[in-house]
Length: 474
Image (cartoon, rainbow, N blue to C red; front, side):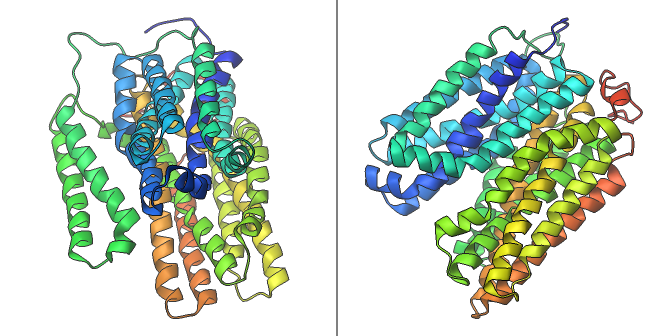
């Protein structure tokens, strides 16, 4: 849809409000488990299932929602996401047992799947060059900053007002966000004829994603060599092969694999997957300092305070570096600083005080690196996506974040648990963190070899989609 509309700060604020309904408010559920369990009178297992369902449904539907946004309207899908967020939060506010809790968490996952790719696509549609990079910085602050503040904000709200108020605030923010986006015109790809959608591809994709997510999240509990776990892995592999073959044989597809012919987009997506896999460090480091060094949960949380401050402070810095030198350098340096921070946490042979200081510095470097990396990476993926498929491309990019984090946590926890079972916590933590260092190194290599030196430079960033030297279909 052609329009002369240019994005405004009002539009950016509305989008950020939508993003934090998931990253800040929905994510805060992780930190109020005891309060929810006691208030609703349900088991810990039920609460944990309710927590995981949000990420599961978001991951399953985010690509489909991005593709739908391109076809039927990015603003429309964003609004559907806002409405789902309100409905999901209302279910949690009114919950008296497990039923509304689980239904609400599923709806919140669907909300996130709608909001994330559609809002990135709106920013691509109505901002150019430096303005787009600035807008994406605020998007990143909403997601990275929201997730960083979630534990503090959720805990504070739950302690002073009750856990249900977390989701009352989420409803308020969603309503304000919808109001702020009201004047933004619709954006979608040009189309002729009746609406068509790849329903068969969606079904295959959902089955594959369910098998993959259950394998990642419950493989350790089921036993990695159990018939059920092996069966889930087989379903995942077969599902992926069938999905790729089916998609390549059709004109109307859920994922257009031609987007991966673009090296900058592919490099940004792969490095994003690998850098998010470093999230396993959070599980290993926090578990080790509590079990192996005698920290309580509050003390271990304070160790990561530097991460929160650094990631929030450096996102806009990453944007400025992007505008000065392009995307490649800040992506490399961001990934490198993050990897160095992670490696420092693996120095478990150090005495208590020294190790505590090193872990605090390590977390700060972790956040500093991710802050520098965030906007250049997102901008590289968005600017290299074709204008008519930017929602779909954004969905794949954000799915890479979720899957990377899930893989990293599962692999790190499995390695740590296997070695810790022999009684050597120090070695278990060290090797568990080395796994994450490897993820970081692979991320750096993917940037070096796949992201061109001129990616993200303003002269290219301000050009319309498809006019740079790296066309989607070469």
